[in-house]
Structures are given as C-alpha cells and as structure tokens.
Length: 451
Image 1: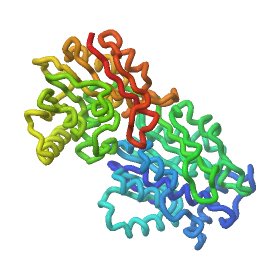
Image 2 (image 1 turned 90 degrees about the vertical axis):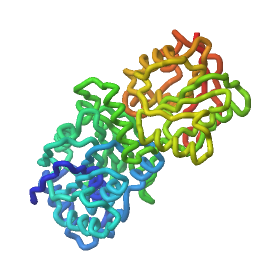
Image 3 (image 1 turned 30 degrees about the horizontal axis):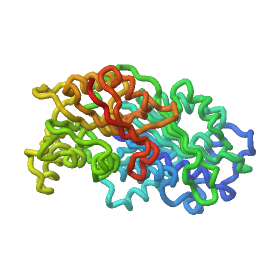
Image 4 (image 1 turned 180 degrees about the vertical axis):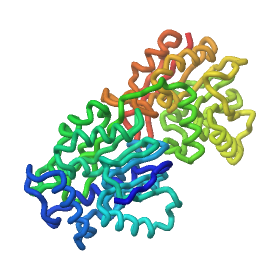
C-alpha cells in the first residue's frame, strides 16, 4: 500500500469506477461461493479481478448513467467542499465529478485499478491540476485530517464481505462532516449467482446507516447500464447530526460561494412563466409605487415587473449577482430609474419607504427552516398596509423525507401560511399556473395582501 496525504482534496469522483468494476459479471476472476469466504478472500478476489487483462472491457466505460441523471437533471446540487469516493476502480466517475467542479480524492486498495485510473487522468487535458487525486488506500484504514463534505459510492457496499457492513457505515460516519452527504448507488439488487458482488437491498443499507445517517431521497427508477434495468438504485443519504446551530451568516456564505464559483444551476435564464401569466393575462394588477425583489439573482423578474408607475429594487446578498443584473439591465436598454439592483441583506437593510409590492421566488426555499418566521416578520415590517406580496411557492413536495435538507429546502403550502397568516391575507392562488418544464407540479403562484 502507498501512503498518500489527502489534505485539501476531495474524493467524490473516484468512487464510481470501483463500483463499476464490481458490477462485471460472468467474466471475473474466481470468487468465493455465496455466503462463504473470509474478508481476505474477498479482497483477493478483487485484486485478481483487476489483474485480469479484460478487466477494463468488463467495466463500464464512462460515468454511471444514474449519477449523470442525478446531477444533469438537477435533482441535486453538488455541494462546495471535498468529496470522497471509495473503491474508485478505473476512475470514470471520479473524473466526471471532478470535471463538474468537485475537488475529489478517489481511493482503491487495488494497485492495478489505480494504475488504470491514473492513465485515465493523464488523458484528461481539460481537468485543472489538483482537482482529482487517485491513491492506493484501504477504505477501512483510510484517514484524512479534514473530513469530507460529500462521499459517493457505486457498488462498494455489495463488494465488501457482509461482516464488514457495520464497519462500512462507521467509516463513512467518521469521514463525512455532520450534515454532509453520502450518495450510494446500490448494485446488484438481484442475485448474480457468484459473489462478490453480493445481492443487496435498501433495507440492508439502511440497517447499518440509520445510527449515523437519515435517508432523505430514493430513486428506484434511475437510469442504469443497458441490460441492468431494475438492478440499480440511487440513494441520496445525508447525515442528520448537526453540532452547531445554523446562522444567517452561514447561508449568506453559501450563496456568495455559488456566485463566486459560477454555480447558479437554479437560474432558468428568463422570466418565470407563472409571473408572466399572472401579469400579462391580468389575473392580478400591479400597483404603483415602490417594489422589491429579494434574492433577485440576474434580475429577469425584477426587470419584468418594473414600469414607469412601479420602481423596483432588486436585492441580492451577492455583489456578483447584482453586478450581473445591472449589466443585463443596461444591455436591454432599461433605465435605472425603473429598476435598480443593490447588494444588501434582506433582513438588515434600512427601510425608508415601505413597499407596495414584493416578489419572492426561490428565496424562501433558500433559507434554513429556522429562518422562516424571520422571513415572514420581515415582509410584514417592510410592506405598506394594503401592499401585496407575490409568492411563487417552490419547491412544493408531498414527501415528508428530507425537509430539513438543503438549500434549496422542500416546502408545503402550509409552510407559507404558518409565517404569513398573522400579517397577510391570501387573496389569489393558482395551483395550475404555468411553470418551467422541469418544475411542473412543484410550483403555485400566490398573492398576499398586508393587513
């Protein structure tokens, strides 16, 4: 084994390849019969597998399709920080994650697997130096001076001996920060005849993780390798432990980092269809006076609302967002007398004239649930009597799992009522409003009047 320092690097990228090695069937090196063999037998089986000259041909040539679906369909946003992937095999998933901006550390105990992964890395001219590190390491003995924000694995759970599963969960708990994320792509879900890999179920996984992690999302219909439909399961798992309370400063930092690093995947590049429908089809009439759009981002909606009768302030915590919005406004030839973008904290700026209208979209869901009452109280403070709050509710979700995981945080209509009903009256709601294609069924536009 080779000792490698991994301080300052992430390992999310490496995990896929080893998992993919584990899924090869029928052409692997001799393995212990099902239910038999020691842990050393299992390790030796994988060593022999990677020594085999056909190992790469038996291995998926490219990133896992389930992982690509998870990230490219924006079902989940990659966090900032370091990512670990154990059992990375020849490294295709590790390279994929690194190319998406994650700093990765990818480990595997097989020298031959890491040699293949290093060859793949050497062929990636477009990957910045230091973004991905491959190392020969035993997952259970692996240590890092800084814990990981995220870990991803594909097939490691099924590749290890069943007697090691408790230790598997404890190792992830040791390596991942509180509230960090563990993504597990389970495979195989049906019996393959020879083991390893062992047949696994979600119940098997949860049995060992439940003392350290809470399951927040499962996709049993994820895309998978051709011919393995129904035989892979992407599980989205996050630690429930949090050692310190969440503060507004922590969440301000999250959004600063997103803009600084260009990670604005929520941006749809245009005006919200629901807002356009509300105004252009005259389902509700805009008042005159002053308006505000907190968390305005690039300002599409703020510019749409602005008119000679209604001056809009687009507010965002990020100076980069504000500069981008002002530039876009100028390119469109819109006067700053109609809409002005300012970098300011929604909860702390001084109010000189109360607002006649406010528009809130993807701002409520960006705040930690502990901040929601403050959100409602702040709107009550800055809105003039009779003023209107347009709240485009998103992301609305019926599943109770994962409501404390974010941002963005899953919401219900009742979450809005709990913090607005004391000071606002709901006067308009359209559960069938137009929406972006990827958000159908998860948005409702509403209008609230200040009492």
